[in-house]
Length: 227
Ligand SMILES: [Zn+2]
Image 1 (cartoon, rainbow, N blue to C red):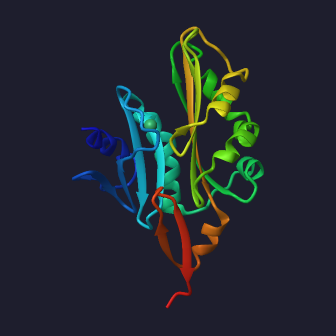
Image 2: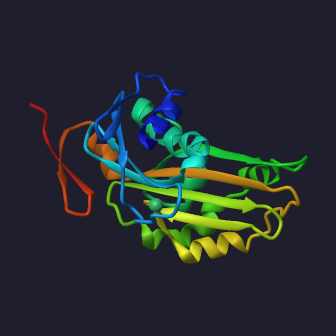
Image 3: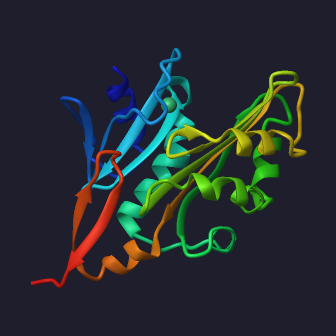
């Protein structure tokens, strides 16, 4: 069921996107049910992108929040799939020295006149720079790490969540919650996703590489001269 929903949301990217048994297939990538955080809450989806080169990129979304997932997580992954490490953002390069980044930007939604307040706030602050010291120890994949930020809510029901490769980072989530983003009566939330790619991987793009996949689903690139 959710694979059909995911396929629908991927239609904003050039397709075709087809549900094939246990995955959604598209150009350069497959999308599957993942198990990054293992939550089985109602409507909770663990979603893995599996690139054609074998790399797995994990994140979570609510079935009702797939639109925002597509605008952020899928946007970052598809940007990488289609263009590689093209658009660099100084903010992330400074926050995570040695890593290259791809991001789909910050999306937001909410109610009332202030519906975009949290999105605007988040867009104009170096959030990942502020959170980097808490996030760095959680980068547990050698080549590709996905970071999701979510913040906002209705007055009295605000929340903030930082996930690294689909797993909640409690300290970074708490730090994000305590920042002075606008609390609005009618509600305003924002979501962002950044894909960090190791420079080792960027170098390997000029070589013919092979992947070794370990039990954790992490990927250590090794490469030989093209022949
Ligand atoms: Zn999850």
